[in-house]
Structure formats: structure tokens, C-alpha cells
Amino acid sequence: MAVKVASCTLAQLFSDESITSSEGFKINGELAVPEYQRPYRWTEVQIQKLLQDFKYYQVDYRDCNGNEICPFYLGSIILHQQSNKLNIIDGQQRLTTMALIAYLTKKFKNLSLRYKAPESQQQIKHNLAWLAGQNLQLNEIDFTAIHITLVVTNSEDEAYRFFETQNTGGVRLKGPDIIKAHHLNVIDKSMPNKTRHYAELWEGLNDINPIIKLLLRGRYWEYLNLRKALKDPSRKTMPLHQQERLMVDAVVDEFSPSATGDDVAFGRVTRTYLDNGGEALMQPQVGYELRQPLNSGANTIRYLEYFQALRHKYLLKNHDDETLLAFDDFYHELVCKLYGCAYLKQLFDASLLLYISQFGQRQLDIAAKKLFRVVYSRRVSNQVAVKEKSIPAFLKETPILDWIAKSYTSQQCFDLFDQFELNVNPDGIINAEKSPTKQKSSTKQDFINKVINAFDLRVECDVTKAEYAQEFGDRFSQHINLLGRR
Image (cartoon, rainbow, N blue to C red; front, side, top):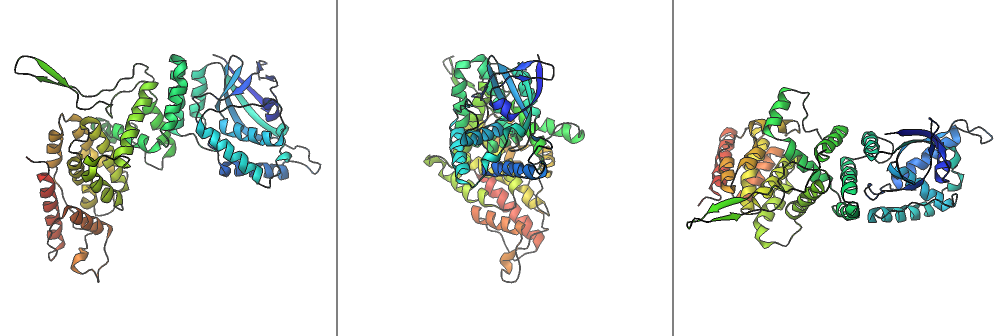
């Protein structure tokens, strides 16, 4: 494997000139955007920042005669040399934006970049119209004064290794962008005629960040891994939401497996023995298991497609299935409208997807309510609001995801949920119903009131806070435990 590094101007790159690397090798070829690259997504926000940088450069880094004092540095560009093409691995956003400016100013005759992704095409049209409609002095941009560093390799794997570790200006590389490139790159090697198909499939998933984060939680929040991580801080845990770099690393580690193989869905199969001595096979759900091992290429892409479809149907109410009316009413009218419970909802949603991937939508409304009592117990057992970092500790004591994963039937799963003991801490309870005009409610009390109304619980108000907490917990648990009983 050979890596060539060269410093050049943007004018040299866009003019299709031969560029000499630091080791004396020649770099030449036509710039190309592989189908498996992420779409062009820069908006006027990033373009304005770049143009502002150019403006400052014109003032601060040129003498009174307009001569260059020092070059404008646009950053590094990673390219993969493939025959007579230079595939852009990193730097597409910057190069495309500069190519649009070059097109409008007619500075380069032979510059050509082709984009097949509909998202890229729409963004290019939008940005061209925006640039043309602004009172900008684009002709003053000197491409001979814009310097870049080229990193060129003849190995795709090495190019993507560089790609995954880059953090250049503009739109930060996100985990989904990296895993898309990884898997489409694998498909391109094994099934080159299918690359476009899977690239279009990926684009059809739209915003995939929410489902990836839910799946990541479902796969990371596993009892044995949690126990080891809590004992040894050096072990990997689920990153907090503000740890953006660690979140990208976790996504890449989990959804960019090195193993290649078949597209395997570990759907559960049960075998029933008949009275006549025969046997029958029944597969209650045909799909992927949330925690199943993944292979690079089509397997992971199909896995993400499957769970994105589940999220759209059940969590975003994108369906016309009348059998889900009871679940929809509970989930969208109660769970989605609770305040101060965002981290618990992340756990609740991950648990729902795990349940659905194993048992389908049979008794889903009952499962959701039983699951709710356990997950949202943190809202009433805490004196203060639930913090994100408290979730792993809760799951170490109450491994609800593991309860679902190890159950063979939905009833077995319900039994595990019902065995959970709900404790309600009276601290933070105001019981505003006793004197609504004199007392200000609290987040905790608001939550309890909404649960009482949603489940039509009859809780005595004219009692002490401790008695009120005990009665609420008892009546809520009794109501939930009766659900699904024959």
C-alpha cells in the first residue's frame, strides 16, 4: 500500500494538472464522487462561513498591492486512486462548494463532478440558486491562492481508515455517514452491480440518527456489559448525549463490523410436536433480532432498514392498522406528552423495539403498559429529576432489556415485569389536588396526576404524603398486574 501526500492549489486540482507528491510521484486523474459516499449537505450556513473566511483572508493576508502574504488553507482532501479516477473519500463538501463557485464564475472549462444521489442534486440546485441570488463578489476568489493537502492512496481500506479519523471543518462527520461508506464500500467489492441499489436504499432511510441511537442503547445496555463497565471504568459504556465524539466512535464500532458474510436475520423459530408423531415449525416473527451479530455490507443495511420501518410504524404512528388503536392511544397520548422524562423515554423506546422484534405486535398495548410501570418507576422513586447517567445503574439493578431478550413468550415477559416492586418516594410530591389554588405543582406530581388520569386510578388525596405515595404505588401496580391475566 502506498500513500502519496502532496501540497497544491485548488486551481491545480480543478485544472486537471499533474501534481507532484512530496516523494516525487505524479498524481493525476479525474475527480469523482463514489456512489457510496454520503450526500452533499452543505447549506448556506456553511457556505457563508467559508465565504466570510475568504473575506477575512483578503483583508488580513494580502499586502496593499494585493500580493499574497500567506496562502489560504482549505484543509486536507483524501482521495482513492482507482485507475484514471480520483475518488473523493473526504473533502466532498468543500470541493463541491468550490466547484459550484467555479461553475458560476466560469473559471475552469473541464471541471466535472457528477452526483446521482437525489439529496445531493437537490442541495446543489438550492446552493447554486442561493449563490447566484446573493450580492457576492465571487470573481474575487482566487483559486491559485487556496492551498490544500492531498492524501492519495491506492487502497480503499486505507483511504477509509483516514476518512474515519478525519475531523475537518464544515459539517462534522457523523456515525451514520461513516458506517454508510463502510458498508457500501464492502458491497462495491462483493456485488459491484448492486452498489447503486443499496445506495438508494440507504438514502430512502432518511434521517437514521434516531434509530441508530435507539439500537445502540438496546445493544449496549446489556447486563453483563453494564456490570463489567461499572466495575472497570476503562471498559466501554454507552456515551452520554453531549459526548459527541465518543458517540460517533460507539456507532462506528457497533455498526461497522469487520466480519463479512451472509445477510442473516436471527428470527425465532418454534417447533411443535403433533399427536400423530409429526411436527410443525412456526416462526412467530420474521425479521432481525435487535441484539443479533451483524455482518458488513447488505446485512447491516437491511438490519437498519428493518428497525427504521418498525420505528416509523410504532413510534411515529405511520400506519393505518386498526388493531394498534389501544397502543397508539397510550403511547402517543401519554408517553410522548410527558415532561422531564426524556432519558426514560429513550430506554422505553429501545425496550419497545426489542419486544416487537421478538414477539411482534401481539398484546403490544399490554406490554407497553407493563413496561411503562417498570421504566418510569425512576420518575417516582427519585426525589429529583432522572439524570442520564443514572440509567445504567438502574439497568444493573433492573435489567429490563435482558428480561425481554431471555423470554420465550410474551407471557413469560409479562411475568418478569409484574414481579418488579414499585417504590414511590414521597419527597417531591405536593398532592396539588388537595388545594389546587394554594399550592404550586411539581414535575413529579404532574407525572403522577397524568398516570392517575390515564389509568383511571382512584387514589385517596386527603392523606399524608407518605400514605398518598404508598396508595398510588399499590393501585398502579394492581391495575397493571391484572392486565393480560386470563
